[in-house]
Length: 150
Length: 150
DNA sequence: TATTGTTATACTCTATAACTATA
DNA sequence: TATAGTTATAGAGTATAACAATA
Image 1 (cartoon, each protein chain N blue to C red):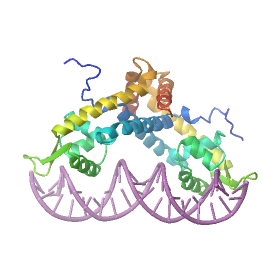
Image 2 (cartoon, helix red, strand yellow):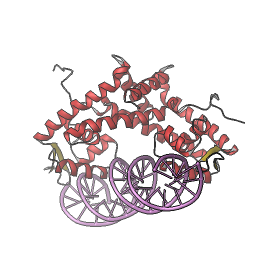
Image 3 (cartoon, chains in turn blue, cyan, green, orange):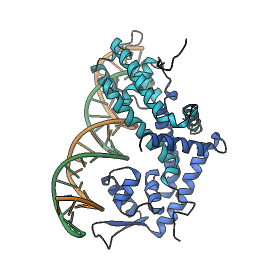
């Protein structure tokens, strides 16, 4: 049966980019969470800590903006990380409405250890893609994100 | 020990596969939902209808298994699709506990139209990847999923 | 006893609106 | 007036447990 470009065949789920993105993300996140349990944090926590460690954001609102979520979503995450002793909030001296968010000494250690584990999980799952496969995958995903205006 | 942006252990968010997968998925899903609003269904609805159209599953439980979700999650989705007149439940004759799920005539039309739109969105977002880029991306995601045991 | 679909319920992640304290 | 953080609340999407009908 001839298939024209404009003739939508019935695709299998694993031919659909949306399905593949969703399940690849879920699988990677689950593996990462299992691994990071040893450090007492989740993949989501590590994402927040990474933004702080990279110096990409200082206030809660800036962290939220970098991660593409609402500022209200940061409150509970930072509450938990502060309770765990890995981040600290201190009021900004220049603008007392803002909290400056920093990793504690223990938080820096936790971050580096967890980031190392996280990278190992990524390498395990992208190992079948060949030597440059992981970087080509990242480049493709960045291009897709760019094309979507994100 | 200060962690700076130049610290190789501190990655930018868009170097992290998990971040890229999550945001690429969100961006594609948002675009798809906007486009499919014209057909009165969501990207999730289309995913369920695709499994039915492909004959990959007949009962509610089989659809759930193909999509990797719990069977209880299918109830509300199918309620909505049935109310919209695009799918029909009928009791199986061989096993009266099971519902056989089928697309209605209107549902087949809706599916084909929506799948055409969905493919267009995918093509728009993967166009920067070059002629074979979309297929290489699919292959990479399938390999990652396979490596994760999914 | 086991299974299919269903309901009730809960948990996570997300968002909007309104409050507070500052600016 | 406007902004940063917070709280209350609600909406998806997901799951577990228990139930009725059927196997």
